[in-house]
Amino acid sequence: MKKYRTKWIRFAGVGILSFSLLFSGCDLSKKTEQKTEESSSSIISPTVKVNEEYYRGVLPYKRSLINGRLNSLPTRLDANRFELGLIELAKTEFDPADYVFQEGQVLKDIEWLSQEDSLITVAEHDYLKEDGSYGGIVIGLALSPKYYLRDDKGKILRDPKTNIAMFKMYTDDQLKEKAKKIANEIVGRIHKTLPNPPILIGVMKLQTEKGNLPGNFILNGKVGSGQSSIDWKDINESYLFLPTNTTGLKDKYGDLVLGFNRFKDEMDRYLPGFAGVTGLARIVNDEVVELTVHVNAEFDSTVEVIQFTQFAISMSNESFPKDAQLNIYINTIDQPKAIYVRQSNGDDFMHVYRN
Image (cartoon, rainbow, N blue to C red; front, side, top):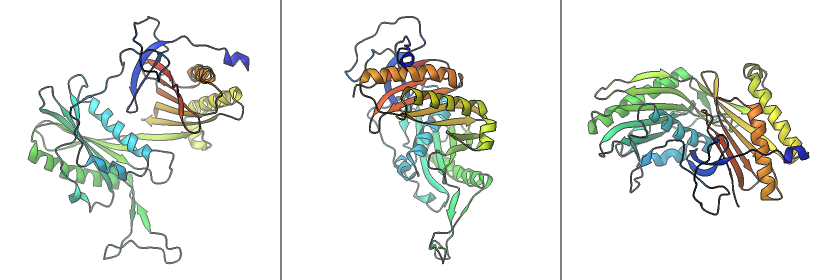
């Protein structure tokens, strides 16, 4: 047991913005020392310049009239992935160094889409040039494959024996066709106000069965500057919850499953009976591009948190894919204790909370 607690990792300071939260922490990969400034009392290590680009914002901050409908998404997992996916999509066309983010101001309402039974929410993100003119717009559509059966008056039908609402499921192809129809209508409305800016569209299929999985993007669209037609591209994105006992998934992603189980076993050896570990792998085109790990444990001191976090980092380097972004969150039952993020390019940092 002692050999785990005495295993140290040398680190220097660095900061990063990840999952819409700004953290400060320790660079575990840079060998060159950098000058740092003392930060707030809530962090243990000094900070330096953020090493991942995100969009600057327009001040004063303007809220969109339609983005508030994110509250109608089924789970917080879906809402997080929806917003982050739209930002990732924006980066494919709008360089964060050249554009400024603003919540959508073009679409004033979406009540005219209320009859679309599969549409859960619409989001608009605007990207402005330095002079304040529109450089581009990103539209997000979140659709549910589940739809309820209704009578001629629009009332939901219920099973006469169980009184459970009756429903069916759209196929992915049906959902994509619905999304394309909705997107064409939205693009037409946008062009009445702004005829020229390019428009990107991201379509998410919401998860209706498994609460531990977020929805996944199934379709991206692009309208070129001054054009009206949408060029569509299918997206092959899925999620895998860990640990898993599903035979097919274990066979397809065997190295990931085995690596996670090895990591989980090592955490339990360090804190026998006190560490619970779960993971969520994001998979695009059959490749793991991101892995998020949650470790829940109880600690007697901040020093123990530091030791445990460093041990978890060392084990993660031996267990998980090197070319995928890795996020490790270490928490107690009621509060966060530490975070470790390693980007896909190898840049990483650790942060320990002083709470």
